[in-house]
Length: 393
Image (tube, rainbow, N blue to C red; front, side, top):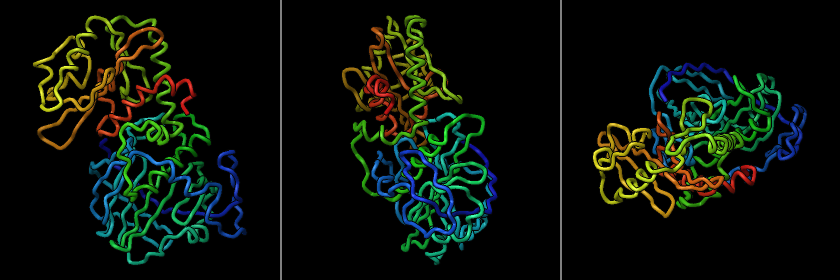
């Protein structure tokens, strides 16, 4: 996503509170006179324990690669950016040569998603104690109403505007830099409960706490890994898609492409009720080779492939990534860049009707821009009925 951002912040932060159960969704009110606690309402270890499939990225200004979960990616687009933030004793200034930043994107566009899922600020400084939880609490309590969670390197809090915010910071002695992750979550133009926004903030904190985790999950077929990485709002996306599929099966025609609508412009998942043309398409994609690229449009063009953005595009040299009896993952490698896109197809029977499910739709590819995201959809399609029957838990 391309966007220019002008953000001028003079932020800040925090307080203290009584220890109440996050699971019970009780809110911790500020108690300025209370002593500082390492943990408020949530064990920090449990935040990290829900591990995710991680993707390594190399970023300038950081001594180690960072790790992102399967549904995250980095927006490298450039634009006008002004950022000033006095965070405890650390002055963050986008005009400084000691500053760089990276925007994170969530490839599951949940309702209310605004195009980015937090920002990672990299600031060079020799003062490793310039940002601490204790300083947050002592210096900035007047700007915040509630703390849901805090430990020595992170806080989840509610601002005076009602946003539920995630803040994480970590110092590297090796590179003399602070890594600071920050994201505000609020309901602008959509409805979400406090529990849903708090769950989203916890999900973001889990991402932040695993940024420098070198224990990558390499099992691409671990459904629990993927499922545990989804926020409540993420799961709602697939709940609504599944509901749209169920409601459409009695009304769509044979060989018709149907894409359940979600908020925004993305076609995440589509279906075709299998008839003669869908069988031709299935047979064609089953002939794609794993060891060499093939121009799909020239060799296997079918009537339905014209209605699938991934198969219709001008640059259409594709290869097989994965294949089993009911599922195919096809990848597209571009000549002009290192970018790789994916599409997932699966034959399934729902309400006694045979359908072909696939990622994306007529208009776009559905944000499948990593191998990990493709295998997430493979496991999602395999487990969709069970996932739905269990209330998306």
